[in-house]
Length: 119
Image (cartoon, rainbow, N blue to C red; front, side, top):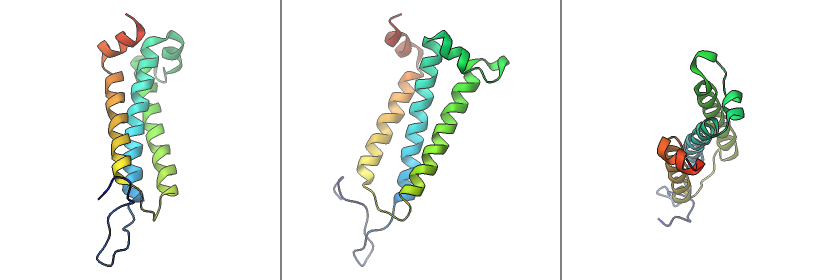
């Protein structure tokens, strides 16, 4: 199957809807990316760190993780509603999701965050 084709076909040749799975995969990537961005912002800027303090004893970590989870859930809800019953190109969805996941992971790695901040 080509990455640009919509998705798998059943025995009759009709496309099998994969929108729900694609929504779950892409939203997971978006959640990981947002977690990384929020973690980097909280580490790089004092005002952002103060903004992300939802629960004092844990510091900015409470807001960073809560924001990442909320972005994951909201994006999942929006995408699953938009792609319900549709067939979308999984090759593209998977590639974007992996890039978002890798970028989010890099942003939570302290030496990489320090490099971006010029430390």
